[in-house]
Image (cartoon, rainbow, N blue to C red):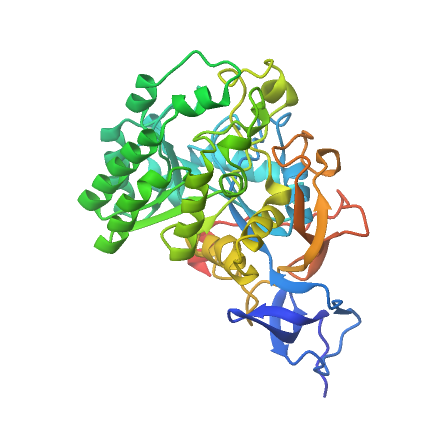
Length: 456
C-alpha cells in the first residue's frame, strides 16, 4: 500500500548531508519523514518540483534579532519582523531581550513576550533572556522558564532599562550560569576604552569609528576569556566587528575554552571607506570598519575562528535613525537587515569564490547548534520541514519600500544582490511565496523554548 504524505518537494539540487544533490522530500505532520531520489514515487495532493534555477535549502535560523515588542512596537514588532523573516528565507528567529519594555530579564517579562508573539508570528520564535545587575543570582529561574541563554552588555546598551555589567559582574554571571551549564551571549565593548575615545559626534564617519576603536572589543573579549578560564562556563561573542580580537579568540579555542563567535552581514558587506559622512543608516555598535578588516573577518569565517553569521536586526523609527541631520553621535545605532541577510551574505561570499554550502553552514547549521535546535538547520529525516526555494543566480536591487520591515529603511538600500527567495515553508506549510503577498492571517509560527527542547 502506497503511503500518502502531506506534501512532497522535489529539487535537482537539495542541500542534504553537506552536499547538493537531487532529492525528493516527503513531509508529514510538519516533519521531513522520507528523503529519496528526485523521481521517487511518493504520493501527495501537494507535489512541488522546483525549477532548475532554484535550490532547496534548510530555513535560515537567525539567532540575533531585536523585535522590540512589547514597548517599542513602533520600531518593529512580531508581525512585521516574522513576515520579513519569511520573505528572506528565515524560518526561526531568536529575539533579543532588550529594546522591548520590559526587557526579558524575569520569567514574568518572558511571558509577556510569548503572549505578544503567539498571536502574530508567522515563523518560529525563541527568546534570549537578559543578564543585567538586578537579574544576577536569579538567572536560573529564567533559564528554567525556557530562554536559550542570557544577553549581557559590557558597555552602555543605549536603553536605560538594560544596564551593562561591570567586569566583576560579568565574571559573577559566568560563574552563576556555569552552575546550570547555561550560555552567556555578550556585547563585547569595554566602557573604559570607549570613555577614553569619546568625541563630540558629528557628521564624520571616521570620527564615529574612532570613538569605538578596535581596542574596545579586544579588551572586553579578553575579560570574557578570563572569566571562561576561571569558571568553565560557555560564552558567545555577538557581532564581532574587529579582526584585532581574532588572535585571542583563536588561542582561547585552542585552549579548549567554550567560546563561540558571530559576525554580521553588514560587517561582511560594507567597508568604512565607502560610507559617506552623515550616512547614519550605517551606524551600528561596534562599527563597520575598514576594507582590510572586513577581509580578515571573511578569512576567519573560512578558517572556523568565527562560527556563524546572524543579522543583528536592530531597527528603529526613521526619526531616530535619520532625524538628527546625519550626526553619528545622536542617531540610533542599529542595522535593519533581517529580510536581506541571506542574499547579502551569499552575494559577498560569491564574489570571493565561497560556495553556498558554506553560507548555509554559517547561517542555518551553526546558528541552530548555538541554540541547541536539533530539529532546525538541516534537511534530514525527523527534522522540521523548514525549507527554502532559493535562486542563487537571480539578482535584485534592494528597495526598502518593498521590505516587510515596519520602518522602511536599511543600510542595504540600493545594493545589487544575488539570491532570490521564491518560497519559504515552515514545518511543511508555505509562509511566503514570491508570487503572492504574505498573508498576515497566515500565522503558523510556534514559540520555541529551551525547556521544551530539554523535555523532548
